[in-house]
Image (cartoon, rainbow, N blue to C red; front, top):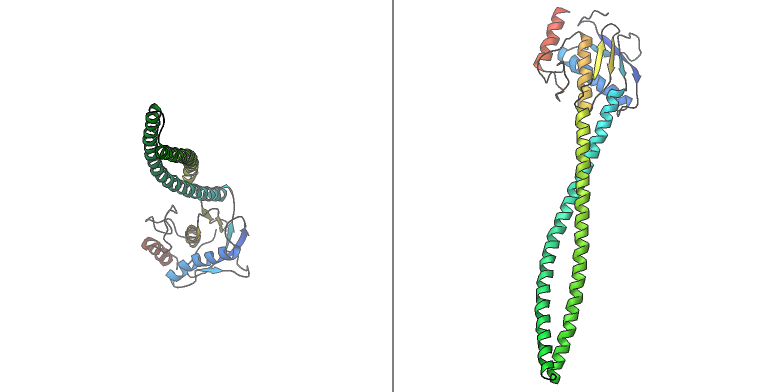
Length: 276
């Protein structure tokens, strides 16, 4: 096991890199450099140095893909599917609510036209009965009745068309509501699945002081990768866990800060004071 001293650089190099992670090797190496420099800048000297030529082999950094990242990637895809499903459901809801408003207005117009038609039809029938009882209508009255009869037929045809249109529109509204409800149910089902697996806590990385190996297993985004790399570098230097949930060296990587906390800085300077 290596005995660390803040006056002696800790050299690191890269070992295995699994391309199944959603990051290029170049970007992974760049984020590793960032994590090393986080400690270097605070200390004022390069305690962590990239061994380009592989001469020292102090610390080997591996990116290892296993069920942890596979689950994370699956959750990301599921979350994206949930978002897409919810967006589709919201679009359908807007569509069917717009159609419902149009339908209700057209239904009111249809019902008003029905009343008008019925009133005119009743008046027409009464006029026909009256003139029939009198033995027939004069020519001008007869012509007026024929004109009204033709108008009533046109109105009846229009009402039938309106009825068919309303029936079609209602079927479309109901179909959209049904599809909306299916999408909501599907999203809720996926949310339950996602929540159950998202609550699983993974070991994102570790540093083995006996072999001087840092293994990175899982990260949800670049910020989490930065933090876990910096965290394991902290252990490689010789630091233990510290207080403060925002701290890089906090035991659980739940924060989003990419700066050293006062606890991190205190732990580094205390360690280096004791290990010059």
